[in-house]
Length: 166
Image (cartoon, rainbow, N blue to C red; front, top):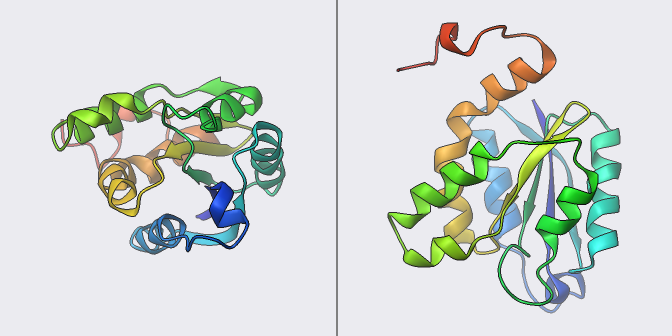
């Protein structure tokens, strides 16, 4: 499995802030055998974010994770950029992340994160803080291989997958 990580941060893109959330994503992906082959930091600009998602999806990456830009600030436009370029939404992913995160903080309800599919890539918006990224990935990582398998036609039925515990 291969992934791309896009950190969305005005300060980070100018070298004024060290990115810790992007590297946290890369480390956690290793635990499921997923290699991060693309990593970049972009400013909070809708067109730039959208174009980077398009570029990475053209590389046929399995997953593209964004980190940052999912809150209420006027500069937080990552969800809009994601919606601009995905072909199909996957609303259950951000719903599950918010549900999990609400057990930790009521501020989780302020996340506007989106997830979806473009080509063969699954795109997932994550929060900008390293702590929140780790909390969200805890809930997402166990289903990524199966999600990829369904998208690529490798797994035919969700109920018959060996990782299902229901």
